[in-house]
Image (spheres, chains in turn purple, red):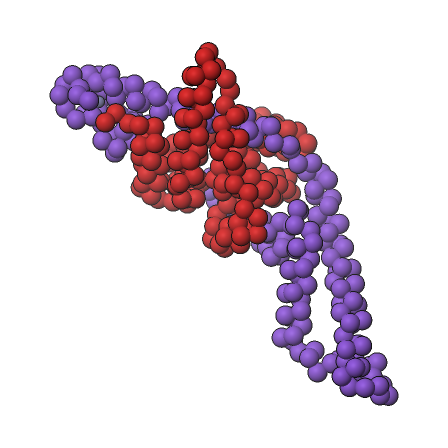
Length: 169
Length: 185
Ligand SMILES: [Zn+2]
């Protein structure tokens, strides 16, 4: 497509400049003479504006979260988690004790020995905890925040606050 | 310069979590969803954002609008996800990309004929697909400009990026959308 001035149309760089800041003198000169580029700019603005409006309509149609309830649920989760771990550990022991007994046969004082099996190393405990944590996450996928899951909530909050504080001067 | 009146209004606004959600939720969710491309993850991040904002409302000094403040917090939460490569983890676990056709169905209908309505929807699908093709960082910058109507300097301040990097991201995004929409050539 040719322009009335015969010059090339706006380059991507010039076009972006027009959209983000303002047309340079050279771009403005071209725009004054080229209806095609004026139309393209207008169509671009209209499309982006429609994109924003559509996205907003989608967002508004999405059910809002009851934050009050979510905050309470999180607080309860945090309180309940130690109980969950205790129950899970108890369940593991219930499995571990008979297995250990089968391996080692009945003997005096086996109950107390079962509590500290040879596998009770720090590595083993860490591995079990990771496994339990992943099971826990699988069981409650709908509201486990990745931040909560990784125990990052507090750090993320203070970091965000700190950064925001310095940025919004 | 802090205007005391504005600050007092904003702080009392922040005290009511329900009205905070009522007024700002959709806008923050829009920014987060279209930045991360995953509505489920976006819900989680937006929820984190509002809880953080509410818990940290005492630190809001009224130097920007409540909306900008919330978008800033959301932006940092998105960054944390990117930095920690949580995206890949989350995507593998539950990839729920926003369906492009479903998205386009939300286009407000100003078109007179069914044909022009279909054309407008198709254009919306193309723009959405083009935005999706950008990197998360390009998209964040692009949406701060076109959703939040921030200028290059404001985006640079919010994202901790040099002005030139913001410009590069923006130009890349605009070039992609321009090519999608057909261009002049
Ligand atoms: Zn032209």
